[in-house]
Image 1 (cartoon, helix red, strand yellow):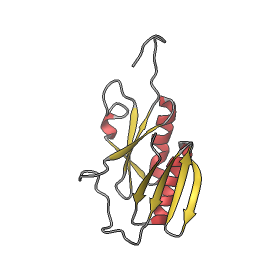
Image 2: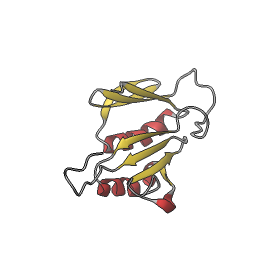
Image 3: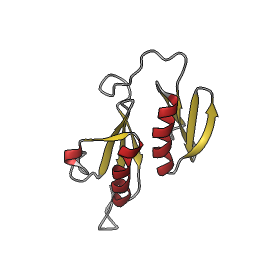
Length: 136
């Protein structure tokens, strides 16, 4: 199981607003707060945003080596739709909007978003199975 993820950000107040909204909507609760960072926890896993004094550079580029995106379980397809509609008001812009909600393929229902700092998230809908014996 994943223990935690730490993202270094150039603007802590902005990251707190953007990530705080998204994580709260996904069921994460506030966990830790200190001068240069905040975290949110769900179960045993937590996510940190930190504006570290050791940060070099001011932007994240998901197209460079390193983190491309984080994918989250986001509930039913209807909940993914609501999150995708609400996201722009909270600093998140749609990616691949012309292919929503199947940008990941015809059997994959998800919203892809990017925030002000260039971090990408994928909000994945729970699978809907018509045959209860179907295994994936």
